[in-house]
Length: 154
Length: 154
Image (tube, rainbow over all chains, first blue to last red; front, side, top):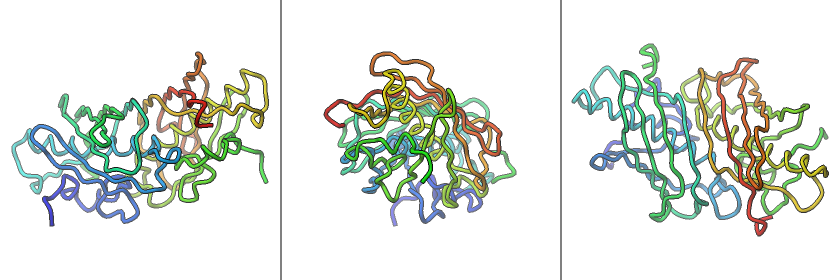
């Protein structure tokens, strides 16, 4: 098995998200890791994820950026507190707002890479900026404002 | 058969979008109509579209707002030109940017309603604002900047 991803540490009770929940067997199940100061998700679109033949639909891109952002927010909080991701209490974030700029069409027949950075942590709120690349070319940019879930969920 | 939706008029060559293409049999196939000055989409989430049990994941909401926006943009252009949606040349839009504000959790076990308004038409660009309601309660707001596809696509 490869290195555990951020999402591998989500408590079972909050690991069903269609975008990033490891317990949602019909979902996208994205997986995110640190690479230095950047968080990185790699994802291969399914053929049906098209906008027009050959290109990815915008909703998938928004979904990837969204869940990449909430995962990065959780991981950033563990880093801030200098404790491992399997320690308690668990961090789990939801999206408060999402901005996506579509720079150019995203080809569907390649692995997509999302690279994120934490811009700001303020209390229970984390701002993440991320770029989506297809074959190394930036095709979309996102900014996610993630809010820590109420403790009752985790 | 019920009243044709905006998406029923997309040319076959650009009717495969996962979010709104009538020819994508694995997609969401949203359908949008005018109700006066507002464009309206109704959609029932699938059980797997959850964020946490009981609530819709943010990526679905972004996808619905996105495709609702591009559909509304196309319909608005036919209105502007005072011609029916089955006339040529066809209008088809892609998303240039998308902003979503998640106001509160969106329950999954009800029909969602997206209500949109055209804010601005400038050349080949249309700005649409939309609200997502669950059981009549606004749970998310979106702003979509839609750009007309290059003529070569349609």
